[in-house]
Amino acid sequence: AEYKLKTKAVMVFFFSFTTPFGIALGIGLSNVYSGNSPTALIVQGLLNACSAGLLNYMALVDLLAADFLGPKLQSNMKLQFQAYVAVLLGAGFMSLMA
Image (cartoon, rainbow, N blue to C red; front, side, top):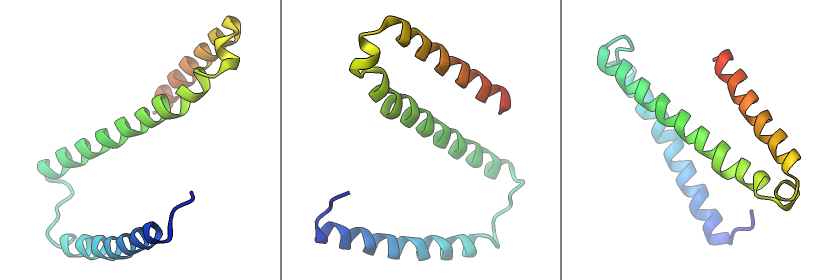
C-alpha cells in the first residue's frame, strides 16, 4: 500500500506500543485467569463467534463480490451457475470438516 510517511510512522508507533502492551497484559492476567470457568468459556465462545462472523463477511462480501460482479460472470449464465454451485459445495464441505 502506498501510504505517506506520516501514516506509516503512526502505524509503526501503534504496533510497537500495542504489541508489548498486549503481551504484558496477557502475562499479567494468566495468573488470575481460569480457563475452565463458565464465564471464561462464554467469553471465549463469543469472541470465536465474532471472529468467524468477520471471516465469513470478508470472504463473502469483499472477496467473492469482486468475482461474481465481474463482467466475465455477468455475461455468461452457465459460468455463473457453475460458480454458485462451486461456492455452495465448497461451503458445504468446509462445514462438514468443521
